[in-house]
Image 1 (tube, rainbow, N blue to C red):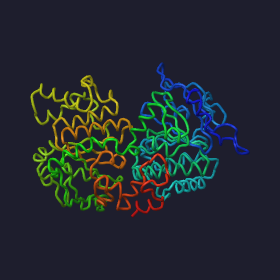
Image 2: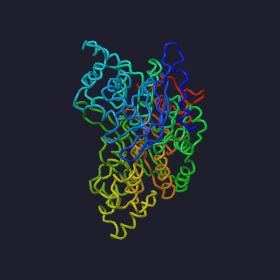
Image 3: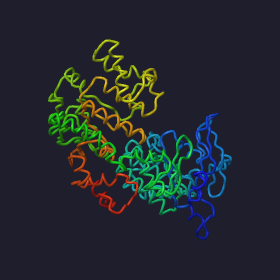
Image 4: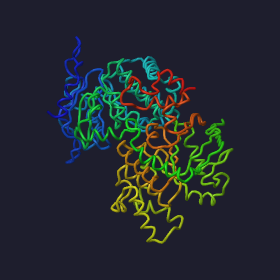
Length: 573
């Protein structure tokens, strides 16, 4: 029996109560999707009952979003789906669009991945919400608006009227994602399709959004189809899992069974790549870097002393960084963690000399970064390189890999033409890339390859310090694991010093030696990774640790697992 055949029996509650339909809410059988002659999804099948949840998991390109679009009948032009997709017993795959359209939005809701792209930036939230409210059988405009405001309150938006009157850019990422969830559940659908609904959010906001989806699912009896690449999130939030690779099912079953003992090699690899499930995976590489640093005396490579920075926004003063101090011993990794707006990015801009502090001092290898001329800073930056967050935007799409990696050598006039070419090939080999990629442009590379090119570019000058600004947040966990291994291997071999900016404490625990936790521009806690993770002293740190997906929500004895109310108090303190 194929894995998907077994999964169609995972909805025992569907139809078990009097008056309920005898059919699963959603049943997919033998679904295949092709673009022209290229088949991207093959023979997929699963079922979801009312008030049940199922997660589709896998890497980018595994077919997760394509399946969701097929269910929603939103495949791009040229896409063709075959097989059977039944909603409440009715085969909807073959319905004419005019007959399916009334189901989309009303009975089947959709929460997209990126609110920045899903919402129109030049229209208010209210104007866009009124379009969703038009799906309601409510002719009175005032009552529809009241329902919108009530729904915004239900999804946790504190000031629904302000949200209604705001434009998207005036709201945070977490607020925008709550707006999208509110618009999706406003018509009270029976099924909700959520496509990576938290991938762009801070870990604490992610937890709140997932809690919200779980609560709505249970309170309203909604069937939830959750699409994610994170096995830990899927294990916490879904009743059943379908593991996809290259458009085919590798494994399927009840969550507890798949999570506890994955049968397929691919599922086992996904499990191994989740940072929260394997905190000591890179302990050997990480400790090698620490031992090398200690052998050298542990002298600080970076010293940030009492640094503050204030900006003026709309006539008001905003203290972005407030009396921040930390040191980083040579050859180690120091992490700056916190939510968006905590001051992490401003701190690294000060470290790189891209901003000047109002007070305090920053030194790299004993040399001051603050108060230097542009030419003097240029010399410092040769030893201080940056790897940006998003490899899709940090590399010039018109340049080939060879030119991208060689450019820093060209700008500093280092070596002969032949020596530069040799150095480019050597540094590409260091990050695990072959010479056959030299002539490719970024759009011909995978996300992981792009980020390795960005790392190679930062290494080509042989710097002492590399600042890593969320270098893996745009990547699948499996690709992320490869990048982390490359970085730690290079650190152990070359003695590099890293400043690692992240909101993902699970990854920090794998990667860093010391941590500073930032909240509203201040460092609220600082220490070694074992001390901070083993015994957090500040409520905000404990709240961040609580938000790490464990793969088993509410496990008895899970460390630092706090009540939702306590977490909320910590985050608003």
